[in-house]
Amino acid sequence: MKKIGALILVVFLLAGCSNAKSYIDRALQLRIRLYQSQGCSFTADITADYGDQLYQFTLACQGDARGDLAFTVVAPETIAGIAGHISQQGGKLTFDDAALEFPLMADDQLTPVSAPWLLIKTLRGGHLTSAGMEGELLRLAVDDSYEEDALHLDIWLDAADRPVQADIYYDERRILSLAIEDFQIL
Image (tube, rainbow, N blue to C red; front, side, top):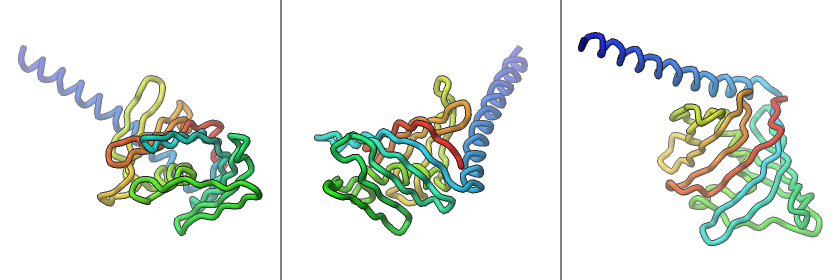
């Protein structure tokens, strides 16, 4: 009887490992598709949490084959039209009468407008630490680097393996949230 119980336990454990591998395979396939594409496009509703103040805005984003990101603010209307470009080397904003001013976050590693770029950078090359289903969504846990001060991202993918939500953590505190719509690989 003990042998049968042990055998059943092994079968359940191996089945769980098989599922985890398929979840990781899905994440890796998304990475490959991003690398082989001309880029991606999406809209991101961003919430930046400074602890004592929240900032909310929406960006229309266009990533290129190198992983660089161009964006335009689409909401709120008071800052709509401000555009920018972010790459590994830095960023640039263009505007007419209004400007974006956000304090730096995560010990000066990023600003809220760089959150979509960080999402794409992490999907393309971050350190995948775990993957599993959460309801109908695949949840990926990914660090943006192998460094000690790495930012941690939880990224949820829909059934078609498109990002629909991402949370960015620094020092175990969520500092940025992105609700992602219309994600398309070009």
